[in-house]
Image (cartoon, rainbow, N blue to C red; front, side, top):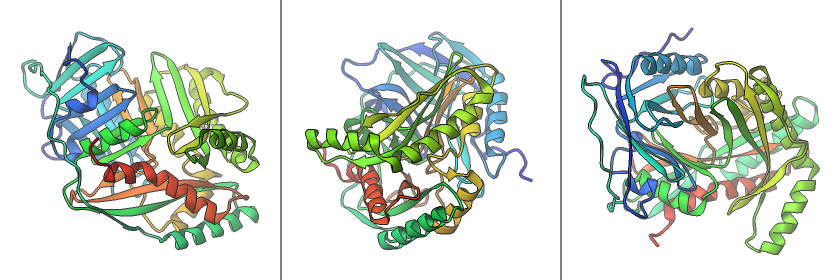
Length: 433
């Protein structure tokens, strides 16, 4: 049995956290992401959508846990750290005061584990309200910070892509095997992922990736935590002042760039029995997991089509009223892994993933997001993402996955996974406008 984690040396709070949040008046036209200074990839944090959210840097405290108890271990650590913190909060909004950003491994046995990071500085924006939170472990209140727009963000230079654990042909073979297992009745659905290796000419600046992703995919949550970076369209769970919401995505079709044709494709997606079946499994798994913690559950009978710049998804927003004190992180634990990233039934699908993928997902498809001292927070699923190699900042692994059901065609699933890799590939190879 894995015991509660011991914080990494040098990053655990040796004394109570001292946190100060004050209003901020940024320079006219400043964007949240433009205020990030140059720092180590692991110490840059982001959760931004349509220009609002949180960014941070530095590391006042952090903790990493492994194994099945990783969610509970992080929860226990954060409750202890936030309860003992000395807090001065002049803004009092969700995301002010002490805030921890988290990225958790998909699998319990992943050596990457699950990490919470408390940045030294967090800048937040909600509507026209801005704030800055500074955190230290000294006895005095930390000084306020006047952030400046960064002008030192550089592209990674020439980028080389290579097959990861499986080639596209080998991965198509894995999909074919999964379809056979489904057709013979072993399971209803499984989500199979593939990886892509990246090597860049210059060290990868997380800020470059974040800004390119935000420009191209404004409807997604653009995130960075502990070297994991991406743009997810899927909100695993949000908890805010007693309301719980979750956005479920399952069922995907690639856009063509022709608006009229794409409308026809959206209509076909909404009628596709294969995609509707996949989506139903995912929605059911989320609703069943939230039900013990919520009342007044709202689960729409039919999905809508979410239009992103490169793909379209079947989407359903599930909502409920929280009936207990469960934190956003614990709600995320109850939802992970959903059918949208694992399959149905979960134990059978998870075992098949281990058998067919031939890779460690790391934190891909795991929860990523943030939580404040009250337990409010937002946790997405780490999709359309990649992990920077902690030993070599010029190397990165990209990930994408597809839901496989009885009607899946391997060649079509390869094409879908290619479409889902486009956001990260384009962000790496984009040129400055």
